[in-house]
Amino acid sequence: MDTIADPDITFDEKGICNYYYDYLEAEKKTVFNGEIGAQKFRGIIEEIKKKGKGQQYDCILGVSGGVDSSYLAYLCKREQLRPLLVHFDNGWNSELAVNNIQNLVKKCGFDLYTYVMDWEEFKEVQKAYFRASVLDLEIPTDHFIFGALFEIAKKYKINTILSGWNTRTEFVMPKSFFFSRKFDALNLLDIVKKYGKLKKISKLPLLSFSSQLYNSLVRKTRLVSLLNYIDYNKAEVKEVLKSELEWRDYGGKHYESVFTRFYQGYILPVKFNIDKRKCHLSNLIFSGQLSRQEALEELKQPPYDPALQKLDFEYVAKKLDFTLEEFQAILETPPRSHYDFKTTEKYWKMYLKVVKLLKPLQLTFSKRADGRSKHKK
Image 1 (cartoon, rainbow, N blue to C red):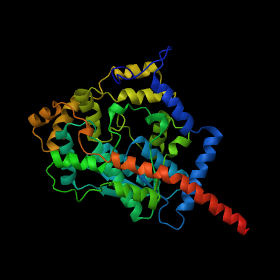
Image 2 (image 1 turned 90 degrees about the vertical axis):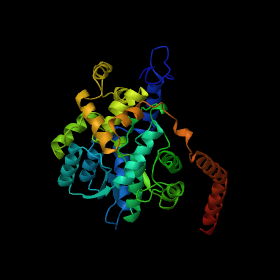
Image 3 (image 1 turned 90 degrees about the horizontal axis):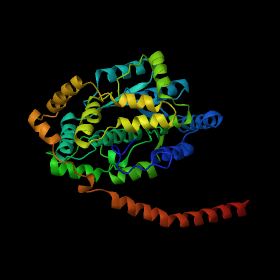
Image 4 (image 1 turned 180 degrees about the vertical axis):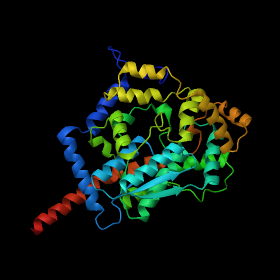
């Protein structure tokens, strides 16, 4: 990380940045190694099996053909879990990603649910984000992926969603690199209303404020980051996947998607002056998986092949029904903040206030109930 990636970065007298100390703090709280990690991992696996007893599946796992989700599927096979694999087809899959998923399903023997987005509707949402000139063009995908996962989890009565997110490779991310409220349906709808041509989103799995509360409080659906409980080394994991699942590498982080490849490798650097490789590589340095010199050498190279960038530019423009001139003009439009549009932030603040107010009452009732229970004994 440097002052180009984040102007607000700070360094101590040894030249060590704040992101490193933030990482160490997060690692201490969320990463478990050795025997402690093994015990916690085993406990989580047994709990998933117990909660899923009697059901067709005991957990749900979104797969993209990438490293993290593929390795989770491998772990599920090893630990004899019964996941329902879900692939989110938003029209941007690379052929390599599809092949990786097919090999994974064949080798592991798990059921695969392919959730195909309504392309016309999804395309209009993506186009609205481009026209709005906001930073986080991955929100339509990220938002609807989780909307689909929660929808399918409810359908099959599954309460555990396995997440590939992990501290060792994905913790470092400046707030200026993305919009943190990815599940903010109000923000998404306002952008679509002002810059899209859809009258209503009716065929996509929208995550409303109420549906998020329902999934969390009523269904008690939980996200589990299993990779934080094992010795997760990216390079070693790739070799396991190649050997066990006939997995093939696709280059940069999350480049299994053509859209993500173009967004991270071209749009972010060109329009927003953001090179996401800096945070991804910093994360690997902090977790001891890469040397600083190796990272600097990688940064000397372009994010991906310039010839492929040109092809992707034309492909993305055509697929979204933009002329090349329109698309170029959009990419040259000054950026706007996501906060220029409506958000559910005030509702979440109100909700958290209510939770804070009710917490003492919960403790009081809990103590009274406990007292009555002891008295009966």
